[in-house]
Length: 411
Image 1: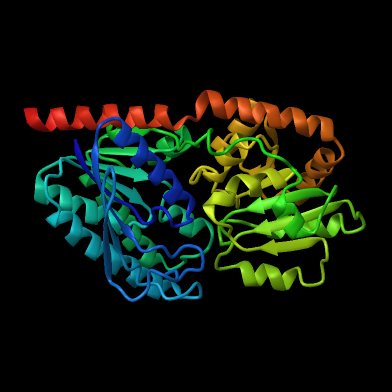
Image 2 (image 1 turned 90 degrees about the vertical axis):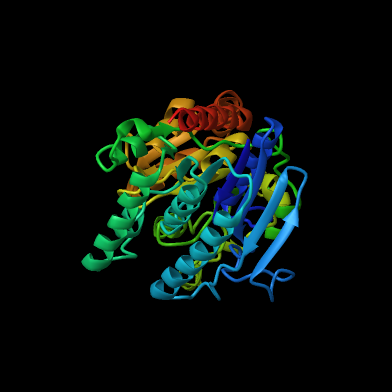
């Protein structure tokens, strides 16, 4: 089947969703599909187009599995205000719609959201070609923006909500990452049967348990200290205040180092807040080739989400941590997907979102129990191998694609 994929990021871009869709495309190719990826020029690492990709509006390349059309994201830097970011997403999505509409021999459109503006881009292309549209929801918007306080204007929220509902209405199928997300969207879709749960996955061959004392730890300047790591985006969805509070609590212990590895709109804020905290180290995003090394260097990995976000978003880094065989401490709403995965798999501990005291107590217990951490790491790896394979996820998408195509041929 000839498939067009519209997504905000794709390798070599470093965004977690880019890594997810890159692996899906690879697996779909292995199942016999020919794919045209419509995406942005790499920009996620520093929120600006990376060196080697600048000076162009569109870049085209051929691959073994099809082709890639990369479009300028129209975002100039990580400090861009919300209005400018909205305009940038709209411009990117408009060009993506034009590219996908003029794409030849397309039998199905797969579009990722967020940004919300990619849903109408996918619908325009699908309507032009008279083919099915599959909408893949990574985070529920505008819910996430409202929960984090990023968007507060009621008029803007209503506009975004209309855009969201319109996207669901025009999709032939909507895939979400968990039952939490499915339940949240069940009252917003015109036909609940459109909703399918297809989780993200992790490449358990590429990401696997590695040597703890590696080059990354040498760069950190640590040896036998316990490294408590947050690796990922540093934005409004990630309440790293709780991490800094824990660092303050354990400041008297020279055997614990806190590492925040990532970039984002709030990194400068947190760097300033931690300026007088020698037990906190900030590191930039590392190339994807070093992901296994970075994960292996962490003795305990943190997944904090603001209250209310646990039922909106499932951070893909969770699966990478599990595949790396490292224990997790999550701060999320009880009963949500991250909480259930961590606790039921035995991969670590989960505490209520925003409960700093409970978070610090759980972290201290993990730090002082290296045997328990090792056991949790083994359980994490076992869970990843059994439930999170890329092949199984791609086969589920494959079945969905053929069902939709056959339905379209009969209608």
